[in-house]
Length: 624
Image (cartoon, rainbow, N blue to C red):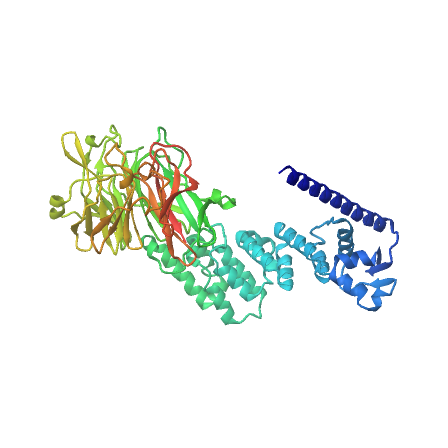
């Protein structure tokens, strides 16, 4: 062992000695070049002369080697004229060969890359490409783009593409002349992209297209129409739409006029917007919108909307907090509130939020539009302030189910101080109106309940678990499963869960109902065997996954997942369902949980809800 260590030490000493001698040789050659000693050829370009050593250049570059050893006249001449190269670039190339130092600037980087391309010096090309990718800005994006296309630098093209998308309003305003010189295909690419950021103002896109068409008079009518159909006129605010309605550009293009009129109809019928079939995807806003909430001692100034991006290779996407300049533009809920309860339903790019406003102790209903980044007030349900409800969508309606009515003197968890309900309230999204859909039959068969969970499959709402008041001070936890058909206002009792639970979440994933977390009653947590149950609606059968079947959970889901959590699905670019996120719901665990179907495992993510609150209730909306 000692001999081996001695041999290694000896080898290391030799390597260090060799490196020192190599550095000394390089330093010596550089000194000879700098002092003009023993140079055997002069390179001339643009009236400037550079004395060099043939052997040194030939050793550094296949281009110089072929020139000086290939039997060409340059191998004999004392002076060689260099073509297709700028003097500043050749000077830097020579300096790099002798000293490995490279001075890259905005002014010389493209000339330097061209020179290194000619001289086949891959290291210099790589350094120039990296420098350009790190220094893309408004003044350089289009020159770099043209350069990247000339030399087929795809990585640089992609980086510039992302820059233009992310800074579109500034690009079209400050670099209008250069932007108007892009090709028809490039303009269609930008205008069709969901990743284009327009600061929630599609009028920017309209104006950019209008200016481009006017600057490119050779563009035929068919090409213009191909661009116009890509503008998302429904994302233009009504006031701005009215301003462009009689614009000569709109009136002179039939397809443009038709799209503007369609957008007007969209804005006129506010309640039908969630079911609009036109192009409505918000630009540059893909990801996850989270509204964290909870019970606080003091009212907060507003209820923030946090946004996260789904990033990754498509096979394993992950959530990352969205932190660029758009982050501050996400609209807050805009009212100082303390919510005792909040439940939500997402329809398309719209998030419907229902709850109790403790300032005035009354029910509230709001809608967030991720396309326009705006909130609107909805008609609240006409009932006593009620908490502990669950919500589900079926068709064009939203249903609020169960709950317990409370007074301002009663806290949410003091169930015995309120009145439990089995009522189901139907909200018509298109009419902005409420109705009670509980029949006499339902009242006799469905117990009054609160803190249940609801999920929808094929327009049938499945209500699982919850708490019910059975008399006196006794509250019972339910294991029941109710399949409610809103069309017929009838229900069917399904096979009960293996474990009674409340304060849980439920979600249909790949046709099966997942019930996750919750409590055995108001205070007791579930055992490890009861953390997850899966319901097969066809077989009317529940299964409790074995711990090894769900890949040895690293989480106690009954502690992490409670009433008030939201569920959003995780999809890749092909919209394949990969799993789902469980967000919020726990007073102690503020991180987001991810269920991955490929590994059949629940894991914690890096996404943590901000602030501290007694009960992390949240609403969530995802845009793919």
